Length: 482
Ligand code: PMP
Image (cartoon, rainbow, N blue to C red; front, side, top):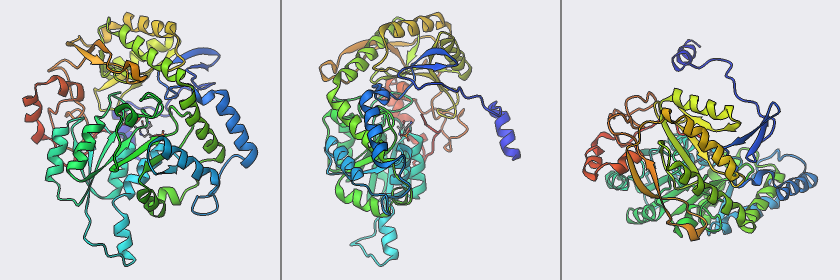
C-alpha cells in the first residue's frame, strides 16, 4: 500500500478522485446538474449514438433477444446476427472476413497478444511447420496503449519507431531477423489527431515482407468520402493489411473488430482467448452497429457537417496564438505543455458552459499537456465561435507561436481534400520537451532529445537523423490512452 500512497502524493492525486457526473450524454449538448453544456471532447463524432434509427434498432434487439449475451460465441452465444454483422463489416472494409470483440481495447489486447503465438501453441500439440517462425512488432511510439499492452503480452520482440518516421521504421525492419514482421500503427493518432501514411507503410510492409496492422478507431466513419476510414481516405488496399476498428466512437455503440484475410480471422477465432473465453456483445448492440454502418453510408450530411465544423474551427484558430498539434482530422489538439495551464484553460472553458478534455499525464507524458478539441457534426457555428472567444481571452496561456506553415485540413468529404490552411503549429525549439524526453518517468529508454512529432517535421532532416541512435529498439513509451 505504501508505494501507492507515495506515488499518489508525488503525482498530486487525491482519493476519492472527483470525476464529473453527467446527467446526459453529449450529442454534443449534455447536462450536468441542470446546466446545459456543449462538449468539444466526445468520440460520438457524427451524433449517431442517440439517433432515432439507432434507438429503434436497440429496442428491436432487446425485444427479440433480451439485454445480454451471457455466453462466448464458441459456446452457446453464437447468434446468426453476429456472423451477419462480421460479413457486413468485412464488406465495408474491402476485406474477406472480420472478427468481432466486446470492446476496441479488448480487440487490440487480444489480437496483438495472440498473433505471434498460434504456431507455438500448435507445436505443443504436434504441429511441425516447414520452418521455425519468429515474430517481431514494429510500433509507432504514439500508438494507443491497448496496442502497446497487446504487443507486450505477446512476448514477441518489440521495436518502437519514432512517430511517423518511416526511415527509422525501415532501419529497424532491416535490423530484425524475425521471419514474421508486423508493423502496427494508429490510423488517426488519438491524442495528436494526425494521420499515419498508410500507402507508404504498405510499401514498406511489401518490401520487408511484413504485415500491417492499422487501428482506425478515430478514422472509421470520419475519414474517406463515404466514411470508410483511413483506407478509403488513401484509397489503399493490401492483402498484408489487418484493419482494426472500434464501434464505440463514430458508430456510437460498443465493440471492436479486425477485418482481414479469412485465414487470419479463423486462426484468431480458434486461438485468441479474448474472443473465445468471454461473453460477446449484447445482441441489441450488434443490431445497433449494423444500423450505424447504414447511417454512415446513407446520411453523408452528418460527415459533411463534421468537416465543415472542423474547417471552420481551424480557420478561426489561425488568428490566435496557440499551437495546434495537427489540423488534419476532427481531433485538433491545442498544445499547452504545462499541466496546470491545460487544467486552468479547461476550467475556464467549462465555466462558460463548454466541456473540453485537458489531456495530461498519464494519457500523455509529463509536460505534454494539451486541450484535445474534437469537432462534431452537431456543433453549431455559434458554439465554435463561443469556444474561440474563450480561447482568445486566455491566449496568455499559450506558448509563443514559432512558425506559420501551410497544412492541409480535412480529408473528407473528398471534394475538399487538399485544401490549404495557414495554421500555427510546432513547439518552440529549446523550450520544447519531447514526448520521450527525460521528464517522462514511465519511459524505459535513456533518450534525452528525440524530436517530437511536430518538432521532428520542423527540424532539418539531418538533425532528425542524428537522433536516431538514441532510440532503443525495444523501447517502451508513456501510456497513450483516450
Ligand atoms: N484504439 C484507439 C486508437 C483508441 O483511441 C481507443 C479508445 N480511446 C481504443 C483503441 C479503444 O477503443 P474502445 O474505447 O472502443 O474500447
